[in-house]
Length: 423
Image 1: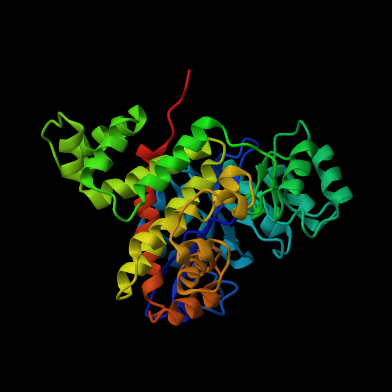
Image 2 (image 1 turned 45 degrees about the horizontal axis):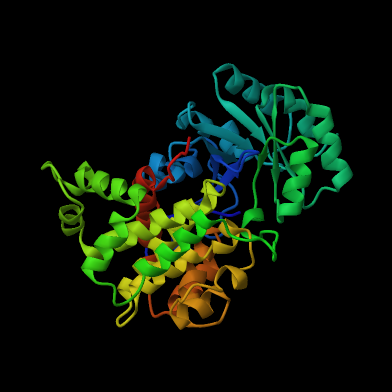
């Protein structure tokens, strides 16, 4: 999966500082870190100022605009270093308790590089080798690294399997990257890889005969009811009251500092009035989606939240657009992943608005264009994202703030959206 949260500074995406994030997942599908990708100019592939470490400062400036904690959700951040950035000391500008310094595969391994890596290791920095190939010059750096990343798309299965066998039981974690399908994810997991990176759980295996558990079906029904265009306040109150988990979250949210209130909330209705109907419909939809996942695809739910907010913000900037429908589009864009079914099957019983349904199924309408713009941006496909947003009549400079807002919003919401643990 590519859950790249991007941030840019400048008047145009092609002139902007751009930062993206891609999650790294463990064997249970939990996000344990993010890789940050960045460039300070459209054509930049490396920092040419050895002493200034301009690339790292650019990354630092960009991250400060949204906050490293919001960008990485407090998790470790894998940060690519070129040869010049490594030798120029860029790694030491980053916090050692959260930064993982990822050494690009094109770094020439000489004595100077080995000495720098040994020193960083001794100083407590975590190092990672990118696109590791057995027998390559990067072998000289293995004693100093904590993570070894293997491109399983470009490496033959026999090759990445041999690497897994070699490092089993060793004090190094293996990361399978460029994992494109769940079949490859399963194979690398069986081979012994610890972590996984790629688009794989955006392309789920389809289980056509799978029946949805009753509890999940109830969440689907709740999601449908919440998004009825003619939903009344009384109906909303009844929906919330009949779900203990939802009632708890509504009360908790209304009492939280996030809503700048210090007065005691004594009833569901008071809480709903305080939060507002549009706000609570949105939040309740998110909670229903989290419950629908059953805790099995937390990364997908997190990504869906960012997409939902990003699509909604696009809708708010387009006159006459249905921002609520676009929010629902982003939120449902990973239903196939969450339900482990094809999108056609996942949508079978959901009476969504026609443009949203068609967009989820890939139809080329304006709603789909908005979603595609967010997806391209989250993957770091800067040019494609810029072209798509322009098709909607918006300037490229709108996307950076839209996505930064979406990341912050999803981060804030995450403390309320986790499904209840049953005992």
